[in-house]
Length: 226
Ligand code: F6R
Image: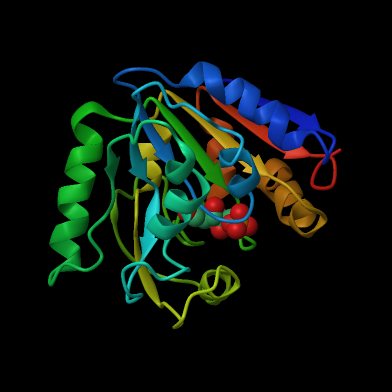
């Protein structure tokens, strides 16, 4: 088991993490990527995925295609749109008539070859992806009800309506990933990060599970940690 911590000055955090990210991509690599405020500055510094494929970590349900709050919109804007080659992006089909079946199909695609490298953020309530508090470590890819703070996140991303559900890759698939990076920045994340790092491991803060991952690194800025 190896949970490592790296902390950088806020001004250099995105450059430092982007430099390390470059060694994690390449042909056939299966990435699982979060979206949102933390990863935006990091993704904007990435210029090449070396023909890696991407699984979107999660997606809000009930938002129109192209809505500013959709995770797909964010990953296209922050990462894909400025890459020279467009990588294969696999997203959970939240627009399908039967989202439960769509989540199952998405989970099967993730599990087929597994995840080589995942980048996940930390929710204000300790969630990972949309694995909200209460999620067990063996929960798989599924439709989930969102916590109120996660619905608020969508509003902060510019969502035109307030989503109440989503599809997320489960804790089980993330814990089975070969490597996971937890990225956390900002003073507002300091307290929840401290609880994720020092509190009892359990479903009240799903991020605590990552401390049991065999190869997980926390990349924090000094506002959030240290
Ligand atoms: C989004 C996702 C979420 C975010 C988390 C932090 O794809 O999986 O778990 O990573 O809510 O969001 P920000 O970075 O916007 O604070």
